[in-house]
Length: 284
Image (cartoon, rainbow, N blue to C red; front, side):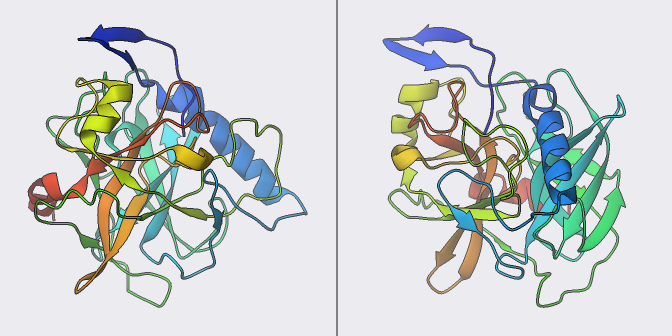
């Protein structure tokens, strides 16, 4: 999901990788230009996320693309999840990372394209988690407020996870507009919303890669085996699990990946929604 500035440190005997803290400069701005250029090209038929498949309209009616207008006038991209008629959740670093801040979001609903089509809502009403840390992306969650949007077959809110389940060994689905490979350059023809199933791993296994400074109890990680995971441009998007008795549930918010790239076998990191559920609801 991300291209990173290398920074390593030792924690006990573990050599842990740092994560990028300048998302917009390193990833988002480039992704915005690439996706926009691809959508404007004549040959348009495809996808994103690493190792997954293209998504059809209505398959993920809770998905909200984010076109991010930065304070420097440039555009970046992220994802978000609709949780009510007036609220969405995303990654806090989509609004403010360590070096760059946003001025406004354009929320894109009911579309598999990011820069065209769908229901498009401009907002500047964004609240970041009070414990959000731009240096390590702890509590990397924000709530977006929009004007009331009506539910349709292509626009639906998603249930927030609750409780203490870890979801280890479950296979939720990540959704996003991001890159499809580390080697992807130029303008691809496969640029629409994409989905991939990822296996949840223990936080202990995830800490073997990133260390205790990055992986908190409020973090959820998925296995990077088989070259699958989130990639550049997927930040803030949903990780969804179909839970028996409850249906589709938001269990994670896309946050970080390996400094070495998207296809190196390292875990993908998400905000664990159940542990920030109460704070999210306080903003509704």
